[in-house]
Length: 341
Image 1: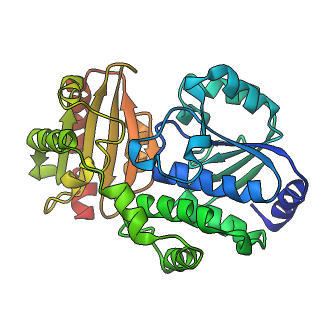
Image 2 (image 1 turned 45 degrees about the vertical axis):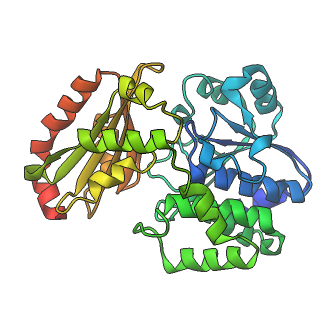
């Protein structure tokens, strides 16, 4: 977004508007952190604002300030449609293509005609927004919301609720500040959020210290299922629907499991394949270290995308067929994975 476009958007926001904030399906900490941070900011500026999420979030995000005000589209489609059709502006956060909303909500977004504002840090965005604030080098969309507020000259508006939401989003999407996109600028933003009232210890504990016995049992099963392919510097994990059911899977229980595969010595490429019989798909998360782009891999082979070192995908094949497809692709990646190592 160049300076002229930004000034136009600033002018649009200078008077109260009906605004919807939309984030992607299966929301994570950055999705809800950025959405709720922006929500509280726009509310303070006198706008009528609703956050619309395609489906519900994991339990470890339920404490976020304002989470109880979020409209779940798939839970009440008529109300969701009413909000979206009435919106003068729609902010789309932490995604850059309507298909990330799922097959229930995406068609509604395609039929409405508000002013779209995209704020996102993923690669290769679709061109649906009149205003696009996109930077794939940023650590998180939550950091971008902070920069957006700062650029508006309204950093003084950041209060405890806004700071808490944005800190939570940055914390989760940076892997607790250890991923490569975490820069000195990120830490400066975080320092300012702490000064504004974000309680770093409390936020970390609420997000990470939420293990249940069933989740620990599920993690044990995931680790038992792990396969390491030394030749390709690759490891992968599988979880079937039956295994999820056995350990009473709740949304968010598999968060971070793929990182165990990536933590193995000499592993440069990791994946987890999770069966979802309700959606009739296999959900996939990819992680890498070095220069091997799982974003490109996911886009080319598994209907997904994301970042260079973290991406997601999906498959409509069976679990076994999806894993076999993945394994069959590895020989063609030998040089790239060797270079990354």
